[in-house]
Length: 338
Image 1 (cartoon, rainbow, N blue to C red):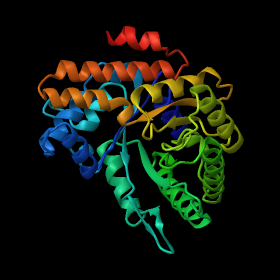
Image 2 (image 1 turned 90 degrees about the horizontal axis):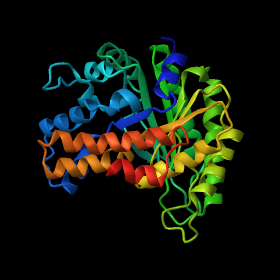
Image 3 (image 1 turned 60 degrees about the vertical axis):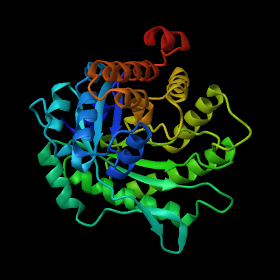
Image 4 (image 1 turned 45 degrees about the vertical axis):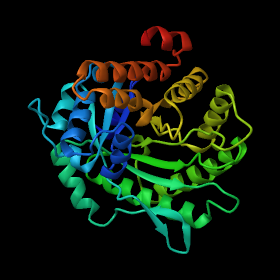
């Protein structure tokens, strides 16, 4: 498959991306919340249970993995990438090394991981990965994000994307404007505009073929502490307008992060965006908590109850699959969960 074909398959109508790339530290927090010990065995069992669910075939186009996970063999026989591929989904890998303090602006971060990346990409390709992910993080406050943060992160994202395409994989470009803070939706719109502009400027400089990329952005949404809440309809209009004005038409797919939204909010907002989507973009989801939160609760109740864990995951995957086509409703949400 060409890079463009891979990108389109990841974001195919009715399908989206499962973000299962939590670091060992992040999954430790999730497991602590359900009183499960953070052991490699438990991490493997939880993830392979999701990857072997029936929803994988119908609603999941790609799965983002963590370094540990892509190298694991399941208790079912195949390796993790093989299991994902067997269900018709594409294995991918998170390759950044995390957000570190930005020199000169220590309250902000820049994402690291470029050193040795070319060699790591070859290893991941050989393990079965066909796409990758790199996340940049931007905070909104009275003085942030600074132009230094916007430029530094865009430059790193572009260098990463160029190396990934050189290695025969599709780069997911993830510039996340965090929803932490009291800013309103207009401020989020402006910052997201500035971030996307700089990212695509750098991607052009680095000769990245946009037809072989996927964008993973935040929705344009008020800060979590903002008193002025926005309706799903307003979020959808602002988000789509921001994308139309700032994302080049060559980009085949846009897969939103859930970024602190609840499972229902992330489905509802994605649905509203797709109801008014008059672009050529395949607009879908790349959710972690938005797909896994309910399944994780079931795992906490009984780690051996594969049926209940998969039922919870299947439901959320189906709901988000409907949202990616603009066909979700609160009635379907309730009826399907019953």
